[in-house]
Amino acid sequence: MVDHVEPGDGREIATRLASRLEEPLGVFAAPGRVNLIGEHTDYNAGLCLPIALPHATYTAVARRADDRITVASAQQDDRFEAALGEVSPGAVDGWAAYVAGVAWALREAGHELPGMDLVVDGRVPLGSGLSSSAALLCSAALAMCAAAGVDPDRRELVTATMRAESEVAGAPTGGLDQTAALLGEAGQALLIDFRDHTTRSVPWRPADAGLELLVVDTRASHAHSDGGYGSRREECETAARRLGVASLREADHDDLGRLDDGVLRRRVRHVVTEVARVSATVDALAGDDWRRVGELFTASHASMRDDFEISCAELDVVVETALGHGALGARMTGGGFGGSAIALVPTDRTEDVAGRVADAFADRGWGAPGLLPAPASPGARRVG
Image 1 (cartoon, rainbow, N blue to C red):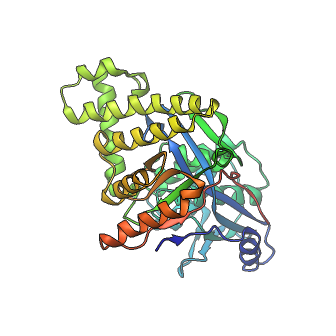
Image 2 (image 1 turned 45 degrees about the vertical axis):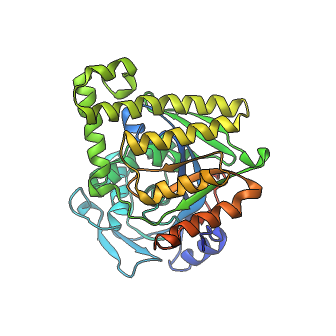
Image 3 (image 1 turned 135 degrees about the vertical axis):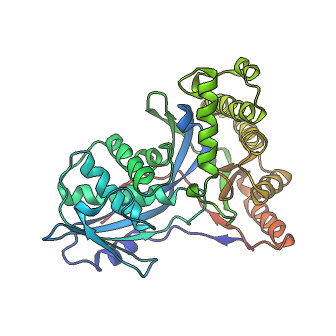
């Protein structure tokens, strides 16, 4: 059986959160994301193509008369409290480090923040590879800016939330997740070029072609701070140094022969071919060539499985099962080592594919996967 994971009623969530604060200033939402293609290319100055999800994290905020920050959660019993000046790298741990870290990063960027109370409600499944952390960071950033009475450029907030995640929460990030959460648009994918940090909207409407994007949360373990993500990043940086390039965006197929380390060669091959696959996907979408899009998804998964070595048995089973029952293409999405996979499926085959994946998990004694609706949705915004 597949567990359908719905995003919840945003208005009801906002009303409930606001009721937990005296004189709330507002409630702000930031979405999770699905990366359609372009994995582990952001920190290599490459291309990525994410969409924002309808599933979001919500943050309500109220000002305080003192200089303290408090953070509470609808999902946790504990409550964080500290003076704003006490928040710094190494001083906060656990989930509250993501929220408190945003306050530190905004202050580092020159913004004066008042004391504030924040309450959060996360509706992006944790550990799913759908960027629950960026949703938390970005909703908190909008809430804090509202409390401070400032409206910084969204790209400035990308930088601040990246610093919060990397330097205070201790989880490495390349910026894809924050960019998608802050700049996503309904009905659009976001082409991000991390060489110059430019973005461009790309229409993403599979329903017009009788297709649906299935997002399957395997519920296998996934965490950026456990070392796997960081080690891949270090390998890419090592390879770039050995090739004498600023980033692997500057590498090409001819450079593979210059590396005598087989592991580094595979890592570079993934990045080089993945960047090319993002460009090819954008071209295929412009020509409504959905079959080609599916082929590129599947090739991307093979590259992540074999060259970047970030897949796992659960992700491979989702991909293989979906492809075996009518999907045009399928791939893991996110940082890897667990999390979620996506499949591009004819709408009339959706339930069958979902059921087949659930059966495949049950046959192996695994828990039921989660299935998320995934229309391209708006980015971070005020909701109450």
